[in-house]
Image (cartoon, rainbow, N blue to C red; front, top):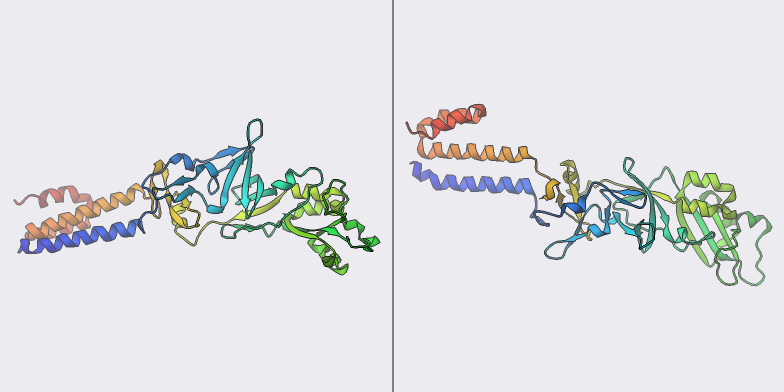
Length: 338
């Protein structure tokens, strides 16, 4: 009778192990089982900025065997540490098609301060050549500190056009400001002042128009001297973006287990980078979880032995299952037919 049950119970054991391993490890691994732990350092300094997860340096990107790029951090939070011989290292983030210098990162409030790299290197009267564009999956504006400056370049350039007398307080008075040929008049407005631009129908009298984010408290400080060069200080002090913790994929499980999320260029979660250079999917496994599995399998095997060989000891196995502390003594009895 015992031999008759053996094949069926072996199948049950196999199914039990397969289901447990599948539930524990999620989808098939997209990354190797180990990784270069140097790509997940606690902190790296570039210039005066400390860079750590979920940001990552561009030289920390690795490839899988099938050439899939992966890194320790969120896809859009890549930082390039620029600087050649004799130059100070400068941390730069790429948003859209443009570069922004990282002025600071505040990890407690999940805030990063960026400034247009072209503005920082544009001399005493820099122009603004583009809006700010980025993917909102991880980044967003800080609504409590966010404001806009709107620039109109190359205005009143047609023959007979004249700047209205009471409009000059918005006109940028900076001798080094590049302007379209034959169009010397350029203007800057805060959000609250845009109505004035509309009143003067400025929308039909400019060659270039750009709106950029700035810090609200800085705008308030320079509000009455924006056109007299104050806009330069406002732009060079940058703007704030916040990053969000990921909750729409397996990353939150990875971070909750003490790991760091790895993504690819497609912005898909690839795996969990754990301590010791190990990869989890979707989370890091604690020692206790492996101990539980080992104990569970041991009890299952003991039960299998009882059923197949020693049916008369079923009460003793029941005792082992209910009272693990007595497992050692119980297992000795189970494995002895006398």
